[in-house]
Length: 401
Image (cartoon, rainbow, N blue to C red):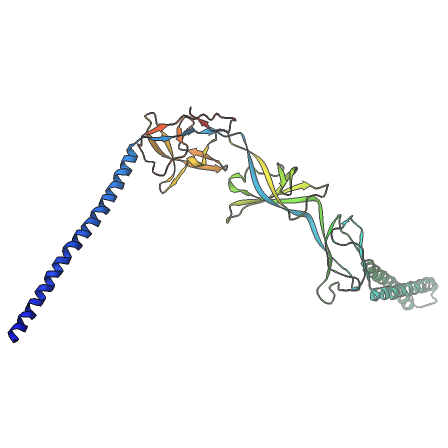
């Protein structure tokens, strides 16, 4: 019986090995089938790409065209008031009345508010009384000095006494000047009880109410009463790209269009630039002035500025869609006389939106593929499709027929 058990234990590993070999063969067959399918797929793709590169590609071509002598440069802009000021009180007191609220159009010199300042009024009365006293003292000193100067000629008084009265007369003259200056100062402070508009404009903010304590800054922070903006002329600020910065100069004109008023055109004049290119945005800050006699333009409006920029003679352009941006750089596909593709590197100039300026790489007589595919390679055979589109202006791109 023991011999039987030993025999069975010896036959068991053989059976397991047999089953393992039996299962391994189908696994190898499945793996081989998958590997063959993947390899066949890859080879098929390569053959398809190679066949595609060898077959004739139908393309449309354009020829580089001379750009119009003047191009329209459209840029976003913002509007600001020509001048904007905060109106403060120059004397402390209580607000007695205000006469204009926000949105009111005021002329230069119009009374905006009045302030009650009893301390200043009382100080002015005291100063005027001191002025009268100084005038009386001066009159007495003058009469006394004249008498002593007459007596000194007769040796009736001492020289010392005459000199003392002469000096007293000079002191009283100085006291009178000081009293007059003090009165003038307080009269000016009393005049500041009335707040006037510094220039013609619109009241954009009112930050006070009747009865408020007004601080002129003598004992704390000054309190603003109004904010006024002058809009007879509007400043329009626009950032001009670096490539056009040398062509936008003071004195040149532009058309300003406001989104809320699409049918109205305003003429703006370039008055100044900041004469510095912003390194972050590569733009030049430019200011235009627009006459706003009707008052329809408001500070803060969004606008578009259209410049008519001259283009240098000899400048040629291509559609932006004809340029390939690849790892090798910017390229275009040119069809040669044998209807084969030549990939050429080009240097780009200014971007006009749908078209781009070409500085080098192609000439006016080259046939450039209008919409080149990504798989375009040197030597690819192409067939040029005829185009029925005719040029309508000098800036239109010429197409082969």
